[in-house]
Amino acid sequence: MLTLFHHPLVASCRFVRLVFGEFGEELALIEEKPWVRRKEFLSLNPAGSLPVLLAEGDAAIVGATVIAEYLDETRGAIKRERRLFAENPFARAEARRLVDWYLGKTDAEVTKHLARERAFKPMMPREQGGGSPDAQAIRVARANLKPHMKYTNWLAGTRDWLAGETLSYADLAAAGSLSVLDYLGEIDWSDYPAARDWYVRIKSRPSFRPLLADRVSGLPPVSHYADLDF
Amino acid sequence: MLTLFHHPLVASCRFVRLVFGEFGEELALIEEKPWVRRKEFLSLNPAGSLPVLLAEGDAAIVGATVIAEYLDETRGAIKRERRLFAENPFARAEARRLVDWYLGKTDAEVTKHLARERAFKPMMPREQGGGSPDAQAIRVARANLKPHMKYTNWLAGTRDWLAGETLSYADLAAAGSLSVLDYLGEIDWSDYPAARDWYVRIKSRPSFRPLLADRVSGLPPVSHYADLDF
Image 1 (cartoon, rainbow over the protein chains, first blue to last red):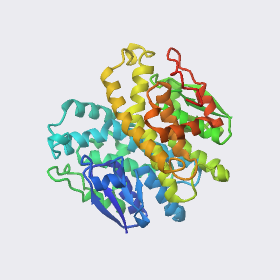
Image 2 (image 1 turned 60 degrees about the horizontal axis):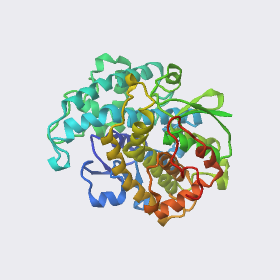
Image 3 (image 1 turned 45 degrees about the vertical axis):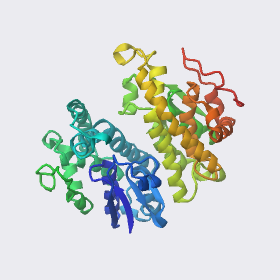
Image 4 (image 1 turned 90 degrees about the vertical axis):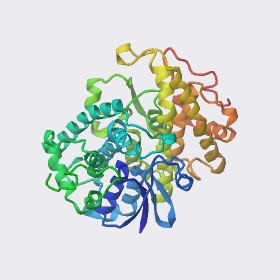
């Protein structure tokens, strides 16, 4: 069984867990606080960022998209209809564009700020950046969330799955990001009916079950977080 | 011939130009000011980010790493010894980690701030964010540059090329990022002899020649920028 260094409120870590779930492969988890630059962890990944996968032979594979490509090369390519990438290079590019959108753009504009201000700062020692949430940062992130939800709603309303006809890495990246925001109660799904329908489908998959059991100490999820019919 | 929407002082755009150069394939360039959210450009890439490749059939391929994977699938895989990815999945993961390092981490901590403050802001209308450079942002970015140069120096001193035994996407990503900083005169190469030797080798490649001719209006490069023996 491979091991993932992760944190439950980091979107790109959730993405990797969903990928393993879809491939039906068990994964050992080690929770790493993203603000603690642990020496042993830095020796695996000098960037200090999450996620890091300890793959075969304890080789460290660093970063969500790098892990996704590695898994596609070593697992996905032989999974046939359960592969999370299309065969066509243009369709693959579209899935990769959306993975970058949700794990890059959505994270940088919305998710990481809300996770940091609302979940991490109260846990962090003051000398590592802990303290009271920054109300202005929360306001900006919440305003930024709207176009991301509108775009997700548009994608979900015009395609079977976010990148096209089949479930792909794009859906799992979006689910990783939006499920962190949903845990924090930041999404009013009633404003985005097509995105909501898509999220119900993703949330009902067996791969999603471990994520619904995630709990961060001192910050329980919003009441509907684990409901499949929310 | 394919077309790239790019800007000469955006590291990830330089990376894509180097990849085309290494594959010996011509590329038409359209300069896009990254701060102008042009309607026609947003219809190609709703994120508004650079680079965007108009590939076969004018399909838009969005983002440097997505373009690199697309080119590997459609060109690299048949280039054999000129392929910019190793065959081994672990070696590919290492190259991808470093591409993310230079186009993600180095850009976010150093390159994009120095390009914005020193090159873009003086060109930008005030209502789009133009104005005087922020001296504090420049100071922070310059301090951040040191560990990136040290790390590059360490990689270059312990490996033939940055990701291992052969030239790979990792070298071209590092060259894209560091050449923007070199244009701006931000790198004191004498402090980093192994990185300097590596940069001399990269800079002497035919693929690099078009980058040495880049000029940004109102901001000429540092005097040694185009010297192969600097």
